[in-house]
Length: 595
Image (cartoon, rainbow, N blue to C red; front, side, top):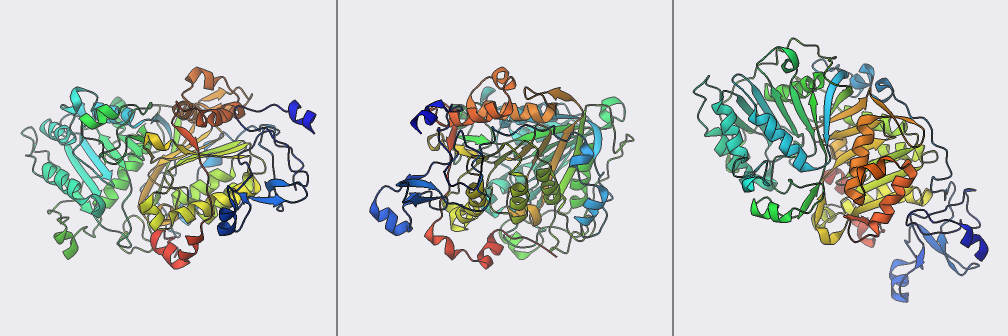
């Protein structure tokens, strides 16, 4: 047995082990995602009613005299390295929802104002928030007379878009808006009536709505609060920025839209190195954290029209937002306003030649709210249904980077369906803090992760960021097989899938590249994944680009053990207090709206 152990090669920081002798799997794991150890003392064993940890995965084998995995039907101890890679699906029609599937996701009501999907978009992706803010500042600063800017947000704040330039003096958000209005560009913002960050949003609202109209063409700026949601605990979570040119020629005949997880508010700005706390502090960006992990993208092309159509449908709805007594009390009451004209670009709504990316815009609107008559009379869960479809397409790997990653039964089912055949599931997640623990999110996280670990302990790589770095993972990212990239506002929870307003962009490229695995994959998704791995490991782009996927995935474990990186291994444990969170509590905190 000792000789056998010596003959096994550890892969990039994983612990070398033999498979349990009586495992239900015939595959031998060469590395482990979970190690079974005895609890530290007898008191822990008594209070947790187990001898080995993690208790939901491990038990004491008396005939072995050691801890090992609990034997379950279907237990698979493979780490994925023994599996052959498969050629992934490459066509957008393989990944995107069909027109019928979108209609079904809307309670049978067709979606007439957005395309099923569009082609020929130019998509730029941002793995660090600084890059998004730089691009947005450049676009906003270049607007001209007659152009239009539209912002949908969860929150805003008086922050600079470029704090690393003159401490942000020339890029303050309100000053940027004032500048574009002065040049003759109109600005319209729809922002959630955010009680959590009420005063800062009221301050931004007041500053923007007090701006004088343009001397050039009477263009103006108007900020509205939006409370049109199913419950008082719901939120408008969409994060989009749209720029539409008055010109109707050349590239300007298509608008630009930003979609993703980043709001123009405090705490967000950060570099990919997460080492700019001095800059953040000097520009008064820092609130609760010393850095921010997130993702965003820029679309130039017909898909940007879909993002604009979503904003305009919300703005032009007959049901006016924020008119109640509570809105007046909280200073969320809106001024009178008019409907906005629809975009009148003559270019195609489905095709362009600006780039090589196919994009499907997907959304969430609750079916339980009765005032979405114009654009989602029976709600919309296209974002949810698109995610299920994409997960089931996975051939080799799934990478998830998310703020929550809590139990959504349908998403768990989709993952478990493909786990036997994929090499790895990688999850980078923000641990529940004291606020979310009170709502049961530690339990809901356990409920999502534990069933995967119990069957595939060595295929699941689970991480967060190092506690001492005080970073916040706010991402809403899914990458599959270096082919499919999903970025948007929706968290991995039930409310984002079915209740809160959300929007996402799913991207499948037309530009192929050959991977070191000998597979044909797509450039946009692979490039984004490599840059995310750069952020997590500190390795160079060139080094990661040359690695087969399984080798690159193993580098995450190396990084987690390296004090110089941001990454840290993460685990979940069942807690006695979980029983407090009944289904009724869960439905209030993380509702699943079904009609």
